[in-house]
Length: 115
Image (cartoon, rainbow, N blue to C red; front, top):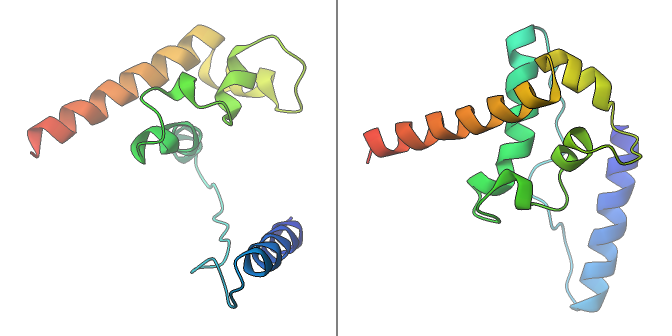
């Protein structure tokens, strides 16, 4: 899998550099992988992935980010995402959505407390 990402990034960098007549790396750090060794970390990783566009200001809601696996998990559309496994991990589709909503509210509360 890392080799596939590497090939993608190298191809993109070459095309970008050619288009803008520049040289060198576009990405500062290489792709990293970290083992998921416990259940709570898996839950946090799933949320982190879905929350990331919101955290970086690309959107105002997780559901608004069109490139997210969140949509595939909450919908009934055909997907390669392991929807049932994720829904079962949380207990149900509704619990999955509620977890995300509550986690965001918790982060917003933390931000208010530290500002």
